Length: 321
Image 1: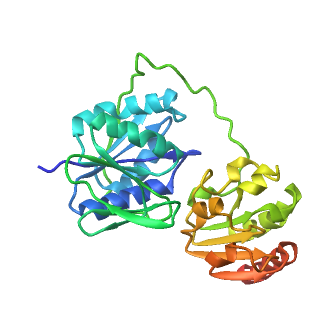
Image 2 (image 1 turned 90 degrees about the vertical axis):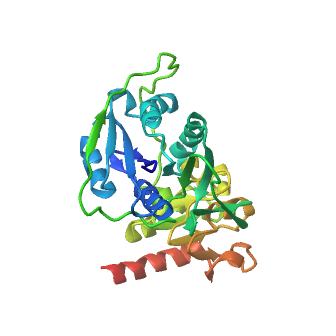
């Protein structure tokens, strides 16, 4: 009997993150529809979410539900899946390339004595994983030659899994905190961010130094409300104090790959391009016709964002009304 494949689902704000379904689809693409794909979900009060996940997995969903797992804590989460990993000895483990996934994946790989391929954006024939390198300037394709493997999937690149023909079985698993647990998360205070999760947004509207002030983000937020988009920012805007660093997109911030990326008052520095250059459609709005952002943009508008963005908002309101 072939080794099973395990998908580690992620919960945020009491909801199942879309990237978990994308990781599930990655497992199916890589290992084939006939593979034994199972999943594990970790958290507190996750009974309903486990049932929801089972509707997509079709196989076993292992639920580790405990009050101490309400917030992500690497040693605790590793302990939560340790027994399951030892029991299943999965051929592959898939999870999202999120802040949580990037932290947990190498620890899982070490526990399994497995290799790891991170930030996967597509999967080719023969389980060939494609990932960007050099800040998105090039791509490499990798595969596991032997043994187990851990894979993280970049959000918004692989389509989410469709519901299974029949829901899977939810298996409740016990949790006991490790004896050497040195930290416990008592509370999480989230920094102010947009209404829509940047990592999973289909449309992202970002502002740079060209917004000139914190109030300069208001036209962008209005457009985002109309389009159901997330609001992001360049490092320049964050460094200038116009917005919180939680919105930063770039090499030292978040990496996003939305369907549409609208850059407002952003010059297009290399650091910023590393975080958004893989967006499917890039629209640039800038007063400077020589701004580097226009070299990567699919569409460019040379003009003042304070004139252009309100006009776009008005037109989209008419179209979407």
